[in-house]
Image (cartoon, rainbow, N blue to C red):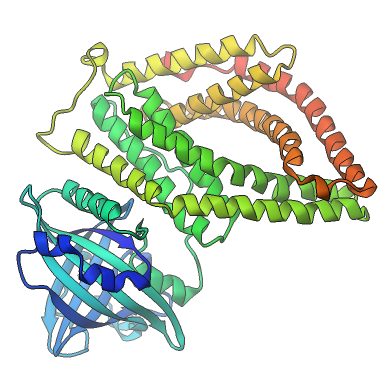
Length: 516
């Protein structure tokens, strides 16, 4: 079955000429570069029957020739696209239903009624500069940079991107070449998780991809530890990168929230498997860097979009509250811009590429050494999981014993431990009875929500101090600050009562791993 493996990177349009004279392309090139004008028609039914089946059907004109292509469901992870693909030459710009290589498409298009409904949904027009490269390791990679437009009626959307398609060798070479490009090019590159077809459909429907939440990890009891770690880490990395576009385009604050959750999950994965896999200090350091740069934006999002509106509902006529909200919105935008700049930076792109390269090289490839630390060499996945869960549960209980006096430092430590345990349980939940796992997660969630509210209240006090003095020096503005602090104090008092009930629930929740 033909499979297309490629890595996509987006770049500023102004950099096209620079790429055309890039010495690396001449150094690694093994054939003369080519330039093509490409015109592509994408087909679907009015209700997008093909898209719902994760299929793309297109006709592409290259000079005087037409090529019919079918791409079916594959995977996209951190810019690496893997899909099944069938291509065949056709005599004109008419679909040929006798030339369908995919059995699924043959069945889908066997209906004469559906074939009649097929129509052009969008087109792309772009220029492609193409080079065939050979790496020192011997892999052959087709390097293309495309610049053009997606067109639907009178609506157009420009794009400029690099495609690195693997012709022979290992996908690790795609990541290595991309890292080289990021390091030598004087402008930023960004891994692109959205294909031209997906962009065309989004333009056609007017719908953006929603924020991506954590998906279940498909683990099996007979898996080795390194395979389990790879699946978990890739799952976290997918969630992180699939929310990038929403943050950069400022669609919804939820995208940033999901990126931060993905970061915490990924850091938890490294922590959970620290006793099993070699330490990756540099990667963990960079994950902490990214977390540090996204946190302020999320704190201001919560303060401005969740907390201040609740206060304003009770003080609608207070001019100081309204003025303070406007000031806070300005500060929120400032921190969101800083978060976007971090995601668009070279450092971020290098981090994502290095994470993927690490997972590919260390664990994925047959024949590659799967290094485990001695302490867990002969440990099964289920026993390893139980050991991790028991240790973290004990740490939570020990920390709970210090919370009686509502000590904020202990509460913060408790919140971190509970998050770690929840993410760990969610990683491994496929190995245990679902009903009992769900009860345990529920008890963790109750505690996490209450501790999250406490954390938000503590952040409120800190964020108020970040407001310029010039904005809080009048009597009415000082009064507004006082109202917020008073409301905040009430929140903390209410949480003091609720947390005791949640702690009791957790104490009495059965430990699902003991049944195995």
